[in-house]
Image (cartoon, rainbow, N blue to C red; front, side, top):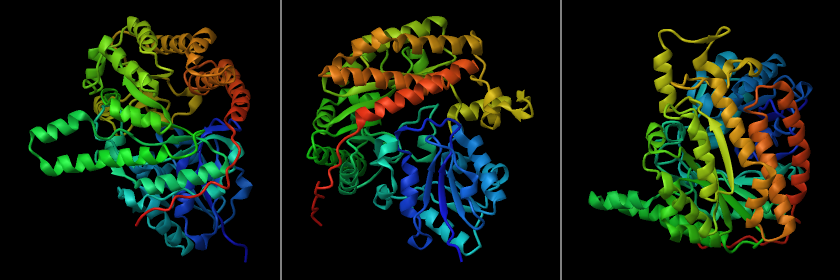
Length: 507
């Protein structure tokens, strides 16, 4: 009898042949797959799309979907089921809309929440021919997080690897669903487990690693101050322990080979904490994605982020990151109700004044699970806007070719105006002259050239194939991105270090 296979699929409409960062969930669920089911077959469609003939009757196909790739994910699921496979969905979108995955994706089962533990039970039940409709993975503790199975990776396909150290975010930004899906209580993984996984990756030749966390800076000075003012001793001790664990992790990262480079994601409040930033620098955490979102007090209030600074104070706080050796990838949102045509120029000026190294400029998108989405869905309840036979509040089900780029109306600007102004901001920030000026942060000519290639790749992958509605421009951007990705991959390669020893930890 032919052995059945488990397939894990990362759906995507855009395949570049090379990817920047590993989709970590693929390799974590590979670790969660019972050994009795054999080694799973991993398919990352950002590299190449799945071949239907690889799916056989009785196979198990796991598909993780977020809102952006849900439509493609459902297409893959229907194909797999038509070929006689068991189909299981997971991921943030399936957690929020399990019934949609069951209906439109023709799932046999859906895993909601964390899959580190629940995925294994779903596989075992499918092997027995008796899957449940929904497996509630919930929010597991940090000590239950699984290390990824990096023995299944092809290192030639990815520039950066990814390791997770913490889940959850204590903030409550209106545009973000993390605090609702992953919770506001930080669930921190033991630093020993993180270091062991990183050593495995360096042995394989990865020296650039993304610390794929919801918020690498989970405890702020404000959090500690409020707990002390409330005389909440237990809360102070809890926050102090979380903070101490962060420093333990960074101390151990600093002991790894000096050619390693780490990158993470955090809130702007870390700019107040120079001790933390200095520890990041010593740990070779060279950069962080920082959610700036808006540059005006009105804009920040609109996204429930009025604890962020604005104006000159914002610029100074962002400059603090760079002064302490941490480069910022600033994230900005356009299309907020408070935005005006002048906001676009003001945002570019702020990005340049603050000295941020990379930037992304996204158009306001109400993601499921967010405060913004809930408000929008309520407004649309009685008389929903339709695109074909799909209500606009289910925009992810609209085919890409006809899907609007903006979904919520703006009080003073049209969607096309916002899109065009956003595109011009990308073009302005990432023109060759501006990139070359920012590349001065690199110590050598070769590294400056690498910086320029990476900047252009980021711009093409993120903006060129995402914002533009012109099919010719999208096609050109995709071709450019594929070529640039191949060149950039060479710049990130490192000689494997199979001799790198694992640490011996005290019990």
